Length: 101
Image 1 (spheres, helix red, strand yellow):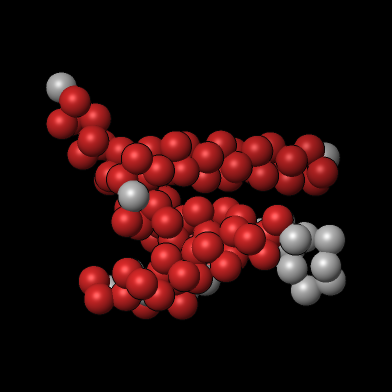
Image 2: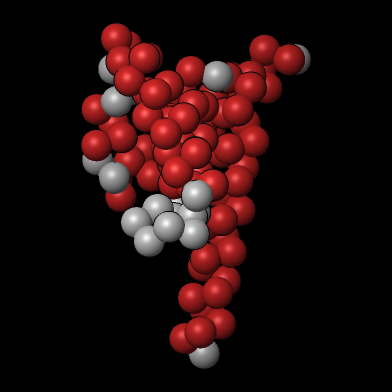
């Protein structure tokens, strides 16, 4: 039963990752197997930079992107992050629908 949940979470994460990768194609390139160190470094830089969002160049957008890169290598983050992406997408659709009238 637990194995099924893990497989389902992984598939959901993969599906949501590809949707995000359509917006930022460079993320797909970082998924290559030998790029673990680059992914880890970039993820930590993005998360720390997102925490410094008060600076003009940095912003809160950096935190979710860093978490997405971390989730590639940390399976425990994949389920919650995929859920967060789905909820964010639904919220965005509801807001767009409300704004359009």
